[in-house]
View: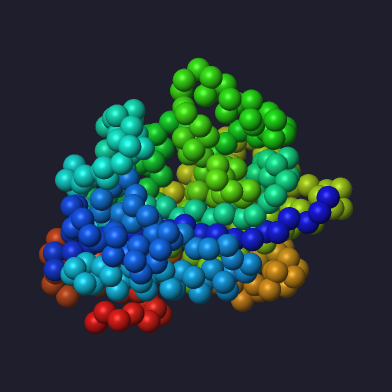
Length: 381
C-alpha cells in the first residue's frame, strides 16, 4: 500500500473578550466577521455562539508549516478584534462568562442544532482544537483510527485549558469535555472492521432519521466528512501556539508510526473502549499532573515518564517527517504544565497581591490574552 501523505491541518476555536470588562462579547457588531474575512479569507468562520470564531490552517506538509499559518491567522484575528476593543483567547472555557447570556449564531445549521439539542447545546460555551491528518485510503483511515484512539487521552492531557466554568474552579484540567459529553454521539468511538462497516453504521443512523449525515457524529476522532483525513477532535484549544504545533507533530508521528508497523505486518493493540475512557477521564481530571494507566505494562505511570517514552518511541518517525524539535516539545509540556495549570497560577498570583475572586478571574483573562498572542507580530498595541 502506498504511504499516505500525512499532511496536516489544524482548526482552532477562539473566544472573543471585551478588553475592558474581560467578559465575552455576546453580541459582536455585524461587520466584525466580514472584517476578519477580508483579512483572512475563507480561513475564518463563525461558530455556534456569536462570541466564538474558528480559524483553519491550509494544508500543511509539516508542523513548521502549521506554526507559520497559525501565527498568521491568530495575528489577523488579534488585529481585527483590537479595532473593536476586543481580543481572542485560545482557551476551551472562559474563566467567568455565563452560558445563559450567550446567543447562538443565526445560521440554518446552528438553528437546527439549537432546536434538536435543546438545553444541552445552549451550555456549549466551549472551544476545541481539531487536528486533521491526510490519509487517502478509506480502509486505512479506519484501521489507523482504531489503533490511534489509544493515544487520545494523552493528547487531551497535553492540551488541557479549561479549568474554570462560570466563575468557579471546577477542579478539572479539561472541563470542556464534561460539557461536550452531554451531547449525543460523542466520546471514544467503537472500533470498526472496515470502511464499509463504518459506512453502514452512519447509513443506519441516517435511514432512521437520527442524523442528516456523518457531520453530526462528534466523536473524539472521526473520518472527516469533508476531506480524506482522520480528524482528532479530543483536544482543548492550546493557549500557546508552540503547544498546538507540538500536538500536531505528535499526532502526525503517531499515525506514521502505526503505518510503519503495518508495513512490517505488525499493529498496535486495539484496547476496549472502557480502558481508553478510563485514561480519558484521568486526562480530564488531572491533565499532565498525575499518573495515567499504561495498559501494556499493566500499571499506572507518571505522565512525565509516559511522555518521555512516547517521544522516544516516535523519534525515527519525527526524523523522517522533519519535526524532531516540535515532537520534543511534548515532553516540555508534560513537565512545564498546560494552560490549565498556568491559569491557576495567574489566579493565585492575583489573589496573593490582594485581588478579590472576581478581580483574580479577570487577571486570568489578561493572562490568556497575552499568551494567545505570544510571539505573534500584530499591528495592535
